[in-house]
Length: 122
Image 1 (cartoon, rainbow, N blue to C red):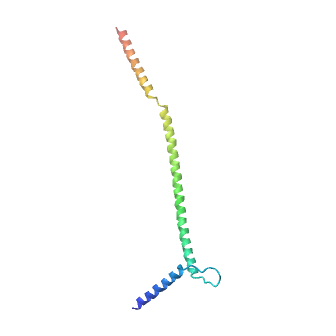
Image 2: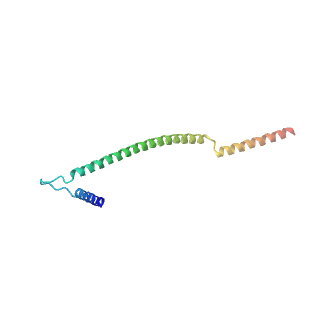
Image 3: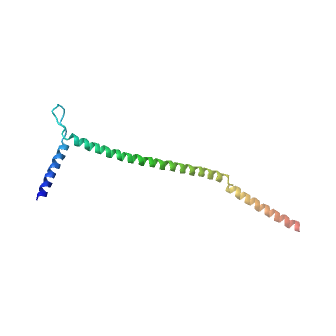
């Protein structure tokens, strides 16, 4: 039974403390009290420390992402250089019409040679 009473007293104290923290501070005019100011300041300081820790983590994450972005830019620049070189090499290749007419010319030359040989053989 004593444990239940101790728990009730503890709960009541916690509720009173929570209620005093949620009350607004008295306005100016003097004669006021700090009304739980220490607890409020401690809570704010703890929140600021938490925010600073989170901000440090975010900064580290952003730095690592910037490093990754820099690496990606380097890789993309290399790919772009290779694409330009490949395009230049392709531009130097003979066209389809050149290959076609070269084949036709070669075929005509072979036929002319065969006809010449046949004519000389007779």
